[in-house]
Image 1 (tube, rainbow, N blue to C red):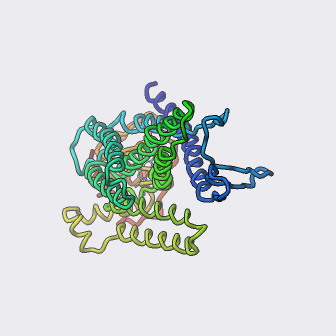
Image 2 (cartoon, helix red, strand yellow):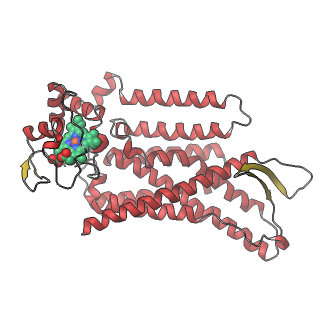
Image 3 (cartoon, rainbow, N blue to C red):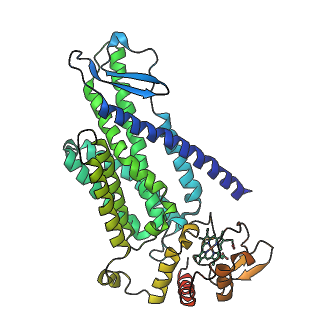
Length: 406
Ligand code: HEC
């Protein structure tokens, strides 16, 4: 019952999380787009810009203006619940998926931290990460855009390296995604909405529209805008096991974040930078090249990184990734398929109620004739690899599976 309840919550939280996230990020992209396309007309000093958009069979005529105390619109729409809902359901999802079993965050080959510590560190990274990011942009460093950006990236890289030492790849990508997602939501709560409340209060008391507060709100909106692409990618990264299961997962993660922000930036320059599209393609090729390099580093680098790893095991891991096994059998998650860490020698319950000991014969059978023995609690979803793997590759996979212990 307990596990069914958690399962059901996961369905609800994930669905609401995705819908709210689409609404929020859609807003962020549209509002920044409107901001960039607004036309400034000189004759009216209260008019910050205007814009005409054709949609739904009519023209939306939009004006952005300075407000006056005697002309506050009666129905003024605020945009915040899309963000808060995304964050709240995201936090619940993280708890239901990972925190109930903290060891699913860890990379058992690199650390023997306890499950509880994994959860504590993850939460500390999210809360502490926000404090540091916020301090950077409140400090004198943040007054200079370039320095603020460099400091923010330095912090993010440090966090990725630190978590990369203890978390498995999937958890690492999610942790950094959750940290950036939290920066975005906290920006809405602590800066954007708060500054808007402040100038609305002054306006209602008869004061002027404080454009400095408006500017502060807008600059955090822009941070959020640039974080959208990387955060979406990281939230979907469970589907890209080749990236997060790689040995060089930290450099790959950083290339992804920087390249996606660069592409978002180039997309924003399209109205005045003629070569924006060519540049996007350039960033894509450069990013892909770098990722390909980190996925298959030259032998000299590889030898150092995996000096102690048996070549048979290393080859097995490669086959496991290349054959797409990791897309279903994920480290730290038994959602789609059984987790294979530590199964060697264990007893597995099958769907017909019988039990088997996981040995070589069973594993070979599972891979070549997956439908002959179905693990209890799973659909018969595994494809057969009969004829797709050589005997040598099978032996390599077996060596790899034997080597991964919890
Ligand atoms: C499309 C998803 C998918 C892919 C790809 C996949 N599997 Fe599976 N695998 C499953 C599912 C679901 C089960 C559990 C049901 C069953 O026993 O068939 C399973 C079961 C297994 C088992 C038995 C596990 C146990 O706990 O007893 C082994 C071993 C296994 N898979 C290895 C592999 C290997 C090796 C590869 C790649 C060559 C692979 N799988 C690719 C979905 C997948």
